[in-house]
Length: 143
Image 1 (cartoon, rainbow, N blue to C red):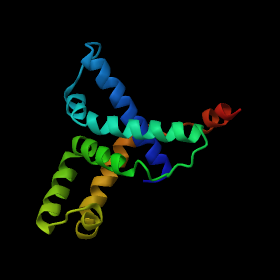
Image 2 (image 1 turned 90 degrees about the horizontal axis):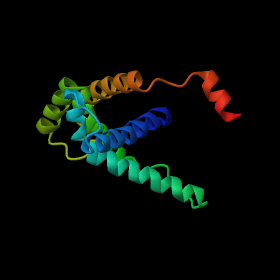
Image 3 (image 1 turned 120 degrees about the horizontal axis):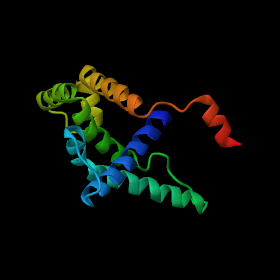
């Protein structure tokens, strides 16, 4: 993921954890899509927890590895992507099964078109839900 997409995925995970907690507490309503996304809440939790740990380490001036949460982020991406992009996910799963790929590098090697279609669909969806901040907002928040 590039940095901008990574930030959006991380925000999405944190928001999903919060939304799920409200729902469990009886304070929220789940539509069909959010009900399916709640199935990904365990991955969202682990990603949010990893990001929080990295943030605490950074605050204490402990060196952090930018790739530390990649595994959790990838699991969350695949889970939520299967909700957002069901058809693309089904094609990717079929390709992975037929190719015998057992890890991400093999999946990308054997199913590049299916993976790219899945990724493109996911990026489109996440960009709609988490549009880039306007330049003015970014500038004024730095002041």
